[in-house]
Image 1: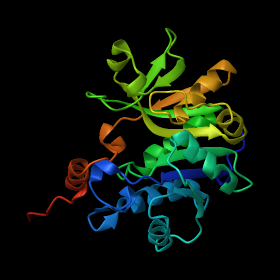
Image 2 (image 1 turned 135 degrees about the vertical axis):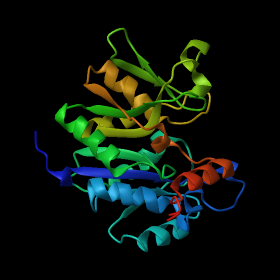
Image 3 (image 1 turned 60 degrees about the vertical axis):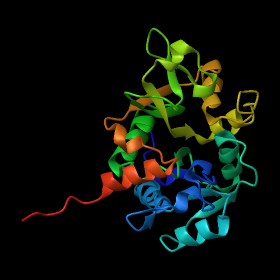
Image 4 (image 1 turned 90 degrees about the vertical axis):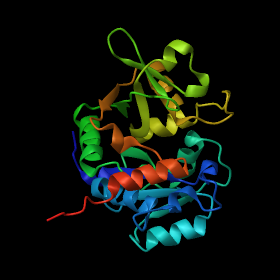
Length: 254
């Protein structure tokens, strides 16, 4: 196995408005402790992939671009004109990937608590296990709103089902999809061409590439994160405030 880090690229999904934020500002521009949340995600991505970053932008694209460029200049951008789901967002990013890329990490731009060590361990797992597709997962006491990881009796991943499409039994599962993937680039190109939008949301789900991999008998695996807080996505003002409280330094009382 070649462990050349330049073969890893990170795609950050940052095109959404975030309607539940009740603001005209693009979701990833909302600030935590004085920094836009996207800045924290870019820091983490850089620790794993260096300059091999692609940001998928849409709402307030120019402002998002300027915000990120103030932090790091060597970033590629892909524009998602219509928000047609996570799968569609990654489709938009593929042509912007560096030529050397062999492993594509997909991150959402609204997970500022994700640790660099956690993401690096995930990528290392993917590569040392020689997987085609890896999913970063976590157990949640309340999995409401998250896609559930479906496994067979031998604990092999057979799919991911979104909340809107889940049966009552599936909704009771606590192992969830964090929305973070590491995927072989060649497989990703092929799989994205096969997914469809015939679901409850009418969107192209990136999760559907798991089914494509399963059908093709490709190697699929998961890494389970230990700290559920790291995977907390921000979709509302309440969640933004909660993350800010968690990130605020504890005052020194001495």
